Length: 295
Ligand SMILES: C[S@@+](CC[C@H](N)C(=O)[O-])C[C@H]1O[C@@H](n2cnc3c(N)ncnc32)[C@H](O)[C@@H]1O
Image (cartoon, rainbow, N blue to C red; front, top):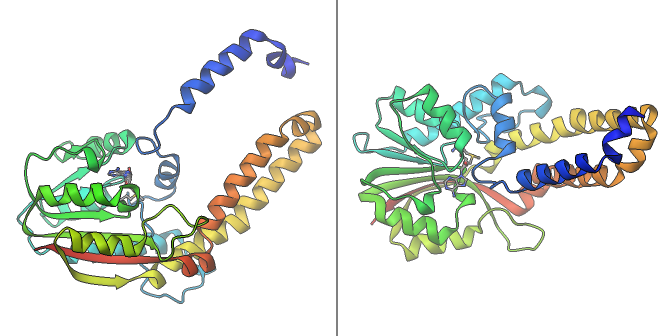
């Protein structure tokens, strides 16, 4: 009976309602749960999908260390594209700061920007000397001009027109804009959440940038997608089944009452599964590596 007490207590209901209201009002770009989760799993402070040299690797053979090596390789690819190593680099959507750390190791002047307060707190604690901005790129008031801008898997969160307008005004002549991200190849209602590749290319023309490098790296990113997919199938789903069944045997009444919550958890998991379905990904998206230069 004691477990049921809060359900029959009006004060507990009022407190629960207040708690719900407070927690429902969080801004996804300033606190991203998924990124926080990944940052606990990975230890190199990188939050992108990495670049596997071996595109044929079996996902079951991938270790956490191999995944981190792939992330390191991805970051090195970006670093190789910085030609002006004296002018400041702006790492837009810097995540946990892993790329910025790599740039600092190469004595390249770098500044970081992210709207996520946890990420800024994490980076500032590790590198108090690193100049960091906590804001959205669209709202950034730059006090200087940059020789390179990097968007490593962060352009998808920013409206294209806003991103180009901002980039146009904060770069030095001949600056480079290095962009790695996935893009949609078709405009379909069931396929949202990243920019259309054709829209992106149109903006490049409209805003006087030229393409220095355009590489489809989907095959090099797919092992990560297959790897995450495998973990969902082999760990997350069996664990979920175990937890639900345990609840059913131990607290059948709660299992019965929580049906709607369980359904919404299932819907969320199914949505995440679709985003890491390798076959679906290849049929609807391309993971691209672009280097642009300001005309
Ligand atoms: C997938 S993570 C990539 C992190 C990092 N660039 C990396 O490669 O490890 C996406 C990043 O974009 C940031 N972001 C989201 N919305 C943004 C915006 N409007 N302006 C700038 N950054 C944004 C997130 O906070 C996060 O740091």
